[in-house]
Image (tube, rainbow, N blue to C red; front, side, top):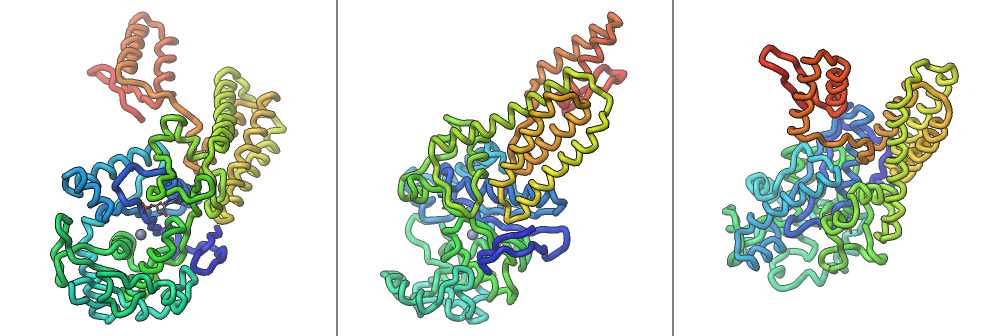
Length: 469
Ligand code: AMP
Ligand code: ZN
């Protein structure tokens, strides 16, 4: 498996620090509004990376934070005259709902910045003691950027170029910096703002320190993968590296992965520019599986332009897979071709070939565009096979392969219709009546029907019990 590492600007063979295990941290959203579909891109992309790694047998510890202390959250809280936590908690819940509808799995841990302030104070203290940070007169704590010799190694920037470019940073309130390149670790409280007690002044953390601290707490000092959108390379990730590597005296993350932007009319989709669609808005028009398909139809490091035409094409593509799955299911149900035919050995080999080709695409820095093309080839193969005579077993093998590979992409193509409790109870009552009349054929039919929908029946002395498998 090869991963493009922003640090080396090269595709590198992925070798986890601990064989068989992966520690992965993805910078999560700032929660002051509904997420837009640009924010959904890293969620979908890195969820797919996680799914593929798990498919290959790796055990992934996946951490993604919620930034729940920030100027924008505080501004909104003041506008609504509520506590900042009311805003952040509301949008964390809304974000989790959007993730669920995008079929993005919950992280192993979803830490919140406000619950990790103690750890941040400890790390800042350590940085001060080691000479990498200092307290300015007003209580602000800055990181001494030039004290980390490798600063700039991720964004491939040179400190002296930055020095020139950053002069404008010497704005009011920042004039206590030793050097314009220094960045904030802790800042003093302002009126009406949430604050925490700290040795330097009552206040709140700067943005970058939270990820260094949460990554260390939940994954350890050295991790395999740190990821996020490409706008985070500088300064966020560069600053995280400086903080973590000077505090821990170790390399921070081995592989740095960044997704390219989702654009609208060739401009980055962002809340501040006002050119965005929320995931909710898209959900009113499309099934969100279509959005997921659309995102994965491009390589994650390529910019992607959002348009109605591309969404329509994504819908068509997804429908092709769904239709094929339905046809396969229909054929499996309605034919009793149990005898395995001789030519199926070679067809099975062909089927395995598709899976190998899918893996080759994913092993090449998660080329989901090529991987989806392989699913299409497989759909074509399935449609041709459906016209010939093959055994039910073989049709089931094709179905399983399509469902499995789509699932690696987080695409749900095998829908089992939801069954409500009342429907279950009524079918059980019908089955009991059939049994009383010694109509065992119907009774068995009902049992099988329920089993197909994941409902397991248990005949006990007290009567029939059921559970969802
Ligand atoms: P934010 O809430 O702005 O911190 O963003 C959360 C995540 O979404 C970060 O990884 C950003 O890099 C990413 N992101 C924001 N806008 C876009 C976009 N238009 N395209 C792709 N990723 C984005
Ligand atoms: Zn971060």
